[in-house]
Length: 168
Image 1: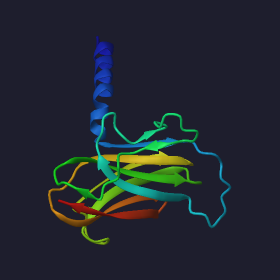
Image 2: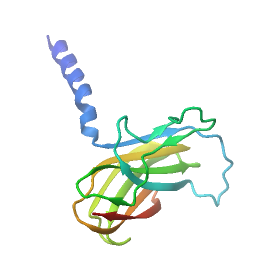
Image 3: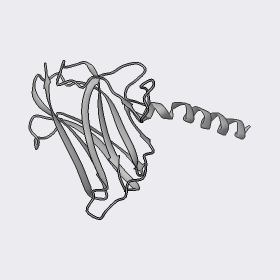
Image 4: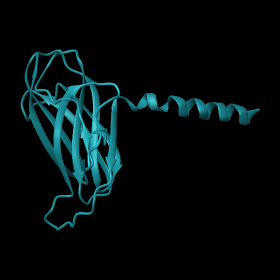
């Protein structure tokens, strides 16, 4: 009888574990080998965007029909959003040579160095590949001009990017 209880508990935990993951996700797609020199950074953060949360959820890999190259579909990047709306913050980066633990994060700040009015982060094991990370958020209801920042941190090194954001 104990085996039945253990199996039932494991099935229940596996079924609800995704609920604890929150509204952040990380995905990658292998990329062709690029020779790396000692002066090349291991990771390059390429974009941080905010856009409408769609169903099926964007971003998505290779969702452009007929594309002859690897493609990434994202919601139209916005610079003006309405407080209280559900939006998706998307980070993209190219991992050129690093394998190991990394953290990706976003923050909304009034200045580039001010404490964030909203932020979140997720850690994962990464490897050389093209990556995107997604956070589904509720935009803060604090009107004004802000900066949307993205960062990827690994081995004590950080790559950062920012874009202007207006909340109405």
